[in-house]
Length: 93
Image (cartoon, one colour):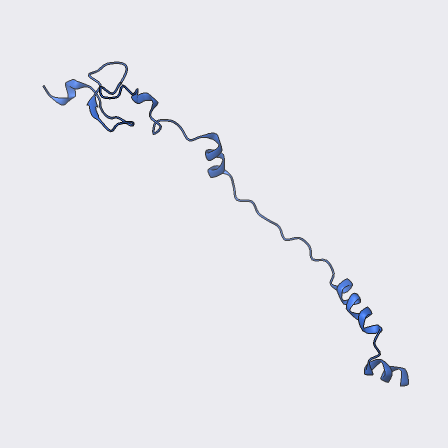
């Protein structure tokens, strides 16, 4: 009897047994009884996985830099407490 007459060949997703469905409507494994239509390989990818893969990459725009004058002013304020040689020279002119 040729293999074509035995129906579709399956490899059980649970136990790994090889068998033919004998042209029956339900492809059940003769060893463990698993319905081969419930195979995880036949199920579509979950929604969460599909949306993650199809999502476009997010573009992160750089935030505008704040003027650094405020930091410099703070630094200058701390120097104002201590007299410097440059400020004394300026006062003489």
